Length: 343
Image (tube, rainbow, N blue to C red; front, side, top):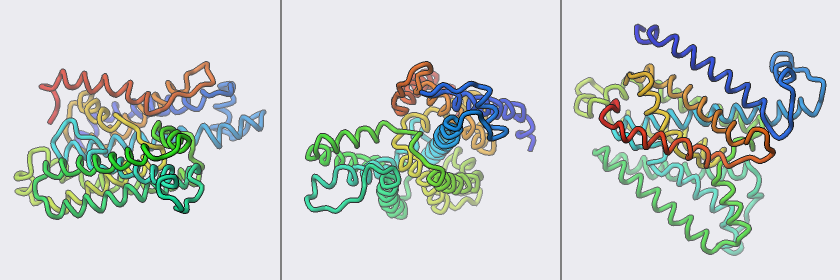
């Protein structure tokens, strides 16, 4: 409680920044809407133009909420992986969960031309892609959990996770080689990532999955704090390492896998935000880090989406490219300050 009161002002600033970025995000787009109408829609639900009302409530606000969920979920899953493996370069996708989702999407988008006679449903539909990607990430999760029950060394699990990612990436490459140019183009477009393709019903489903992942993460705070000092120390505190490892892996799979399924693979946010949060808060207690990382990730993703919209232009850049452009310099900066990293 002492730490929480100490950082109360910092959290208030983060919440204010989040609200400001949210309003700024929904104020921008290819259609110019006066700012007073944006505020009016948010607080009264009324506007002088019905088309503006439709754009705000059926496109911009869902996209902004998707950005918040995506940034927060990826950042928390990155924090979980970095703590579990005690590796500053571990991200939310080191266990191959994202690669499994990519394989599921690839099979849906490119499988018909490779496996002749394969019956596929409407692959271009976003819910179809979400289902396919979810199945792919779930199968990889089952494989990782199966291996985790037989491997005691956490670093060995990390390497095995990377190998799962390599295998799925290789299968995607084979599919890409044999597929048609049209199907390959659709897969490449999906791999760019997108925050603006979700309906309210899909957003509700994503919210439920992310909430479950965050709940499991909160339940693992004691284990995460103990793991920072090593597995032997954690065991001496009564932490059941095998159970804790399972819970952390499942939480990461729910957070990173659901985001990849609904929004596509989005790079660097999960890797960079936990380090940035540690530098700014100068603390390793996960009671503080978890909510801080959640807020920082949401703010960063909203800012990336603002940049991707190219304010003043009708063009929209791939969100994955923007997060990489911003995230890569952050990781480079952190590596140059490695001796100051809180691990």
